[in-house]
Amino acid sequence: MLQIKNLSFTVNDDSAGKEIIKNISLEIPDGKLIVITGPNGGGKSTLAKLIAGIEKPTSGQILFNGEDITDMSITERAKKGIAFAFQQPVKFKGIRVLDLIRLAAGRKLTIADACVYLSMVGLCAREYIDREVNSSLSGGELKRIEIATVLARKSMLTLFDEPEAGIDLWSFGNLIEVFRKQREEIADRSIMIISHQERILNIADKIIVLGSGEIEKQGDRDEILPGLIGTPAAVKNCQGVTEGV
Image (cartoon, rainbow, N blue to C red):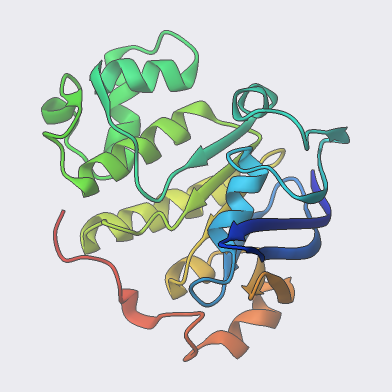
């Protein structure tokens, strides 16, 4: 279980500080798929980065399975079982896709095993398994490869920051099925997704609405989603998903 207690994050903006996250407290239970949504600039990505250890909070506490991880680095948190998929994936010059998936999994996967994860995100394994993870790949391809590596890790808590960004419509539908399947298999693990997409909100166990750095509402999907449909927090019909890679 992830517990966040009175978490705040302030950045220096010229001579004054700007509070991005404002005294947030929440719990992410095991075995649940949680979606965080809300208006742009509301602090969603910042909250995910604070949980992953990319940013450090100004105040407050983060507990993971009862252990205080507030001052731990991103590497230490990864070893504890927290994985993070960036909104803009990182390039790894000189590393093949196969090597990256094996590295993420932490075990010697066969080529067939690695290809399964690529297929899950809509990539033809034969065309990508030996490709180098560099600028020769499009943003959409990099995004899907990163999601494949995160799935291969099978972490206790996996954070996805707008996984639909840069994904074509066919692959987005495939990705929904991946998340749906993961949701059915995460008895002792949790998934947190930052998204505006209604199709992703529809598979959530719990929805958290974040605005202006504060939790505006949270609850079970059936309780929260009806009030979001048609608002900026939930974009219908996969708007914002690109038509191509």
